[in-house]
Length: 160
Image (cartoon, rainbow, N blue to C red; front, side):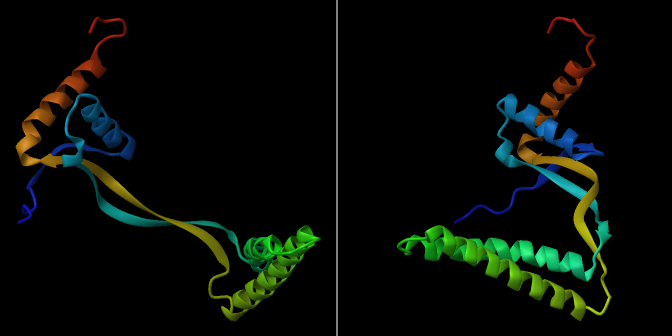
């Protein structure tokens, strides 16, 4: 029978992910069983950063790039089995893929009717990052974190 879920305890909390990652790395460096630790982001929010305006021309260009990759793949596939000018088969596949991609990209953008005329990148961000460990290991983890904090507060050149 598989064991039930372990209860966890928050041993440290940070405003940024690199600090939480540094703590888990420190635990790992000090032989702590980090497979029983987690970094938990809380108070999540979705941030969508607008990258620029999307025009029919840009949509066609993006479609052409995607189509070119697909055409290159198909061209390589057919080129493997071609006797003679295999490179011509690859170039034709690339050109046909780019053309169809541009056509479909422009049509797809035109069909949106201007409802989303921008490009963006989405990311999920947390306001707080908690380092949690199994409750049975909380004291050991806290001792290591206290040591980490003590070491980072020593003056430069102090013996360790």
